[in-house]
Length: 219
Picture (tube, rainbow, N blue to C red):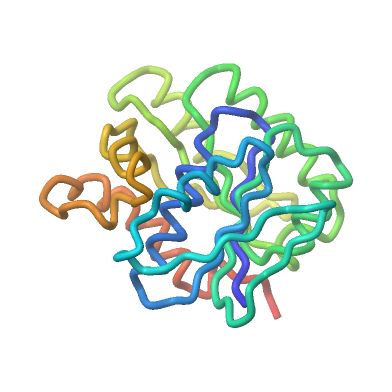
């Protein structure tokens, strides 16, 4: 089973938007997908509750007492995590995943929070490179702004503990398409291509990475 973790302990980074769109993408590719809502706010669970029955099915798993019941036959598990993850829970989430995506919003507060979290993450011995692959995504970006440029520069220069560059996948714009899709339990991959062409184009680098061996731990 492929497990993808969407994690940033800072609230408001758009984790649920990223998680639901990834889940929908793999479902449209014919995969048996489970979306695990580990956040008490239940945003992903609410999204699934309004998802039309006519669309590709996505199973739901809810975290109860730090345990997930994953439906049998799940091929892709997407984990939407809460804000304020503690050291103990962080280690547990990381131990369950093969791939981690960290969405970051373009603001000075969010960038500083990301710096602190990545320092904490890299201090967890053995979690980077061998056990989990990590990539960042600039999320809810207002294009052609100074804040967006600063975030892009920051994400392009993060180094892993081994000296290699931490993969920065793409910049996802602040688009009304995500809001329209979420209201109906859909993703941008299920809206009209003519209206979501640019958004889909921005997702391409991340999807290529997720579909490649580069996003999987070394065997």
